Length: 106
DNA sequence: GCCATGGCTAGTA
DNA sequence: GCCATGGCTAGTA
View 1 (cartoon, rainbow, N blue to C red):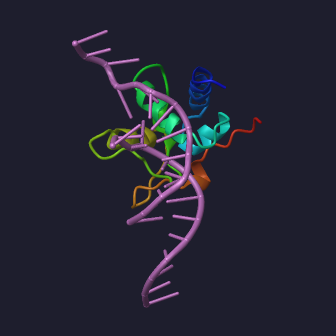
View 2 (tube, chains in turn yellow, brown, cyan):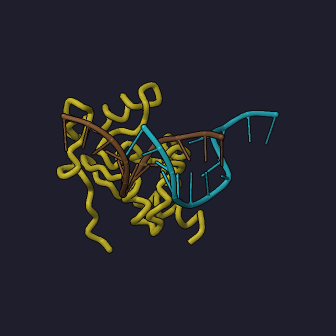
């Protein structure tokens, strides 16, 4: 699989995340066939987040937290998720048991 | 060298 | 908190 294919697969997977659900960088990388290329997923998010109709904000880290730092869009991502009904606890964490998207396919 | 990650260890109470 | 990881890319001149 080359970079184009990986990118297309990652984009397709992100588009498939339903509203009110989230997934992690590592999960997307794994589902796209490159379990260790989480940084590649990060780059695609960065490059494409404002273009297309990508629900980039539905991707969080494995701890269930928003990885953006304050000032880099953290508040915006949180607001977008909350608008879909995703709840954060006092430490700004999402309960993944409840919100993690688990695709049936595979 | 740069990272919007992830997994694991050491050392303490 | 530390380190392995993977790709070289952040839209300009």
